[in-house]
Length: 233
Length: 277
Image: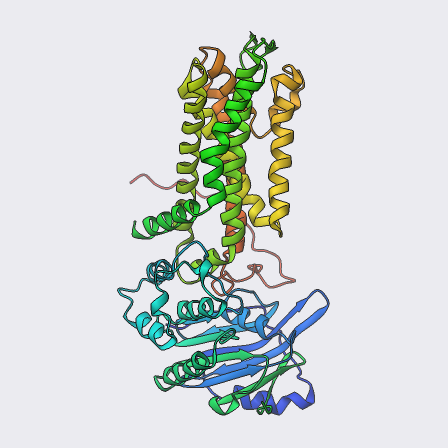
């Protein structure tokens, strides 16, 4: 059953004229994630200014934006890490969130992390996790302590923890940081497989190098989303 | 139960891998208490123990061992809990947002704190017992345990509120310096100031001193120390709750139950007592 979290919603919001059509395009479809009029500011600096977003099943979408545009703030709000000052966020299914910073426990091994999160998510086994680990070539590090792993391998674990329960919605914040080229390719193959299996995947990045791999691409600018195209690599 | 056991197991693994803390436990406690016994003169120090009102005249090196042990166990547990709280804040949040019940995480942390405090207090008491024979070793261990628990909870509070590691360590050391320094019979000669009652290890100091040199059991002072622990633990719990809160499952913002501008409904008239069944 979808969860709905009502927030303080203004009685009406008049969007800037140039944004009207873009918003209508984003909003006109049903989705497993619905974001309406999300606003957030740090002090006087408004980062999100009435942002709307629909994420549908079976879509691999990307959001790009300059440093400080509010990409991570948006993902934190979507994942529940941060409460928006205004607006609504609705999720239609279980989701996995891969934060920009690697959030692991340096004292535990990879296997201990998997056990900890298996229990947290109430998973009967780690079959799906094993597939993700194999796809990312993480299996061989299962008994290593995360504090001793390289940055890229830690990021693989960071991503695996977000994917291990086969979520319907994936929120990935710069998920391929520190990956070598092969792992980077494998990440996109994995993302495409998940999309083909009906999952919604939202990748946030600072550059749109991989626009051809995405079904939808948005640019976060001025606190709202605009349709975007790739930039040359 | 499985949730609690898993969290407790990994919490203990994390503590065990804090090598500095393990070295401090293994070496610092015996080194410091043995040095205090060997270096401080054994001539008697006279002071009045507040808890009993009696004048005590223990050997200087013995009372220094007790204050030194309090200092050591409180700082070590404070450091251990600060370290795991400071570095594990975001990890705990990720676990909680992945569905781990926060109550199990809190219970696991409390268990590891209690186990660590118990082991360290027993170890420090055993080290003191190798040098001389305190009159009530069990009360001495209990007093050290309560002090260690209190500083462990303070470590959680500092680890949750402070932004840099050095700030937390400084806060712990300075707190301990003021706390033990003001109460130390060697420094204050058993000060008459009532302010010492409020210090974080007042109960521990009274109960431990009485345990060393009198036959008086002091459960009231141990209870006062437990109260200090409860207060610090409550603060730590609030900080943990705030840090691991999921904004998506938060309750709706508070709203008035009636539209603005309308008068609130009148409270119901006094109800008639219900008829007996």
